[in-house]
Length: 131
Image (cartoon, rainbow, N blue to C red):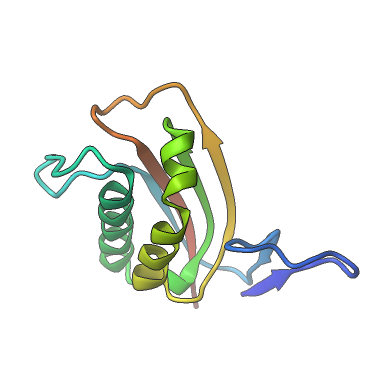
């Protein structure tokens, strides 16, 4: 996996502008919200939901023989921008707990609502497991 940073560009913080990978097993992870394996939310706050959503992604990756460092793209959908902005430092700690210092190509999209209430954030991922 190669992180792509064009010459002269400032390095992004908390994500990569692009990732190049050689062919391998591709794993697509559907949007994961902050509920547990029985689809129960334990908090309405963004940080615990982010923590659980990342745990869910890591569990799905493991089922496919993938690890967090195999994630090459992640998209986040959040319906509470002020809460996200206020929690960024805490979210960074949660990220490092589950993903380490690996930062894939990422997009953050703010939306009006999520399907699963009281969901505040939803994460989807694409991983490539090396041959």
